Structures are given as structure tokens and as C-alpha cells.
Length: 125
Image (cartoon, rainbow, N blue to C red; front, side):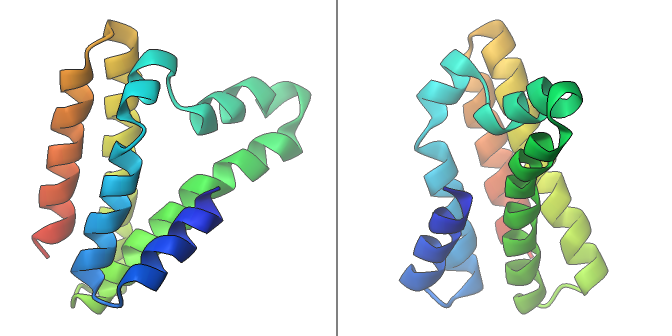
């Protein structure tokens, strides 16, 4: 699903800011489900870590793929690759932290605020 999301947003635009905006919009599209159920990627990583570590790695690859997409776009916007990768990882952390806290407190506003911070962080480059 992550590969399909990336392929889809990259096919819609070659403009880095647009790709970032589209990706964040796609992540936002499941906001209600993430608040209600949490993140299935993070859950799979956690639940499979002991019993099926290879499955946990496969689930975690989604984060790597998204961070790579973010880093490529930020680099194309002129950031040094090391800075772009750090910011890309911060975007993933913002998203996942927002999901975790919004889910724990059953408060969609928390995740909405996390998405707003992601947009500012991604698009200010």
C-alpha cells in the first residue's frame, strides 16, 4: 500500500512541494481510522517484533519508504541530503506521535495539529 501511495503521488506531480503536499493529504485521508484504531504499521512492527521479526521488518519498511520519499523531495527543494533525511524522519515521527497520542486520548484534534506541523515542516524548505 505504501508503494502504491508513493507511485500515485509521484505520478500526479513532479514538483517536490506538490508531492509533499499530496503525500500528507493522503496520510490525512485516514485520520479518523488512525484516531480510532491507531497505526496498523506501528502495530504490526510492535506485535510481530518477537514472534515474527521478519514480518516486523517488512511492516517497518513502510516508514523507510515514506522517509525516502520525503527526503528525495526535500533534497530536490534544495536541502542538503543529510538535512533532508533528518527532516524526513522528523515528519514520520510527527505523524506517528500524533497518531499515538490522538488514539490514546481519542482526540482527533491532536492528529490534525500534527498534520499542520508536518505541512509547515515539509513545505517551509
